[in-house]
Length: 420
Image 1 (cartoon, one colour):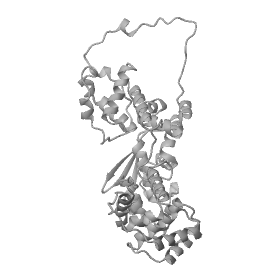
Image 2: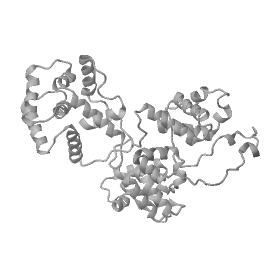
Image 3: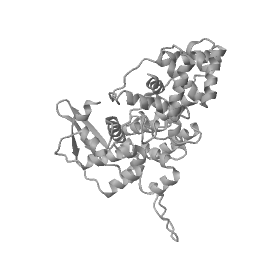
Image 4: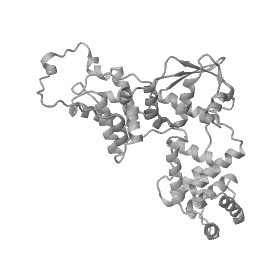
């Protein structure tokens, strides 16, 4: 990633943004992508298509101190559909600017509309997209019914499938088996022709991705749409999918998160950190010591850490993280009390008050001592530190508790990055 700073890049623009585009960017996209991506998009859109730039130039324009921040901002723009990226070994990178969706198209792009609704809240969402009500009073409605004018035919099944607005959001829903989803239906519910329709398939996969629904739950959403709403409109399928999601998640709606840690919008890593903090805060010192070796700690060992806790006023979480950190740094060798006391003094001067402060302090300190060496964009597979498996294994065997650390790979990476 360090070499990326001086790579060539060009801008390709076939669009001109107007006031409505910037209004859409500010009110609809900004809450989802964060100010870093918003600023990056604005800068890229202002660059000359005939010039050759470098990532260093972009960083200077944006006042980004780290190339990783720029890469992350660009990736969010790609993921949200505002930027396309091309690469050539000899010529470098080309970034193509894509116009933001207008309000109407954004509202009809379920994956965006639903996430915005959760992010800004129902009241603000309804303010952005008010439901128009222009009722005519004092007149009798004599409008012809559909059946008064038309008859249906079977010439083209695509007419029974709602038009989907073409958007720039690309979703690969690897956890949803569309073939299995189709097998759950028979022709009495929905015809095979509709199930094989590409637009229908793409939209079902996007809706299931947005609401984390499996094949059975998506069938439920479709059947409800047919039976209750009497339609096959995607917005109605999505509405019923959202209801199922809310039912499964204590009334909450889906929210947008980045996979990597992000300073501007929520990320999956935030939940992993909370999980780690809960673990160390709710484990006793005795449990933590036992988890490292599988041997019941002696009274003197426990007493020295209780003494340290009493002298420093640190919480259980801080003391437990200190034990885990020292154990990993010294390859399982447990030093004398004085060693921990010195660390406690350093952490005290650093104004550490809780377990979260410890995590932030260790990670920030590692950045300084390593000279902030950027990591490559591709994730590197790391071996779990020895204490990681032993800690969870012994803890659970001894105290017959559920897993206290998630098996999610992101959680493992968080722990390894913290203590490596």
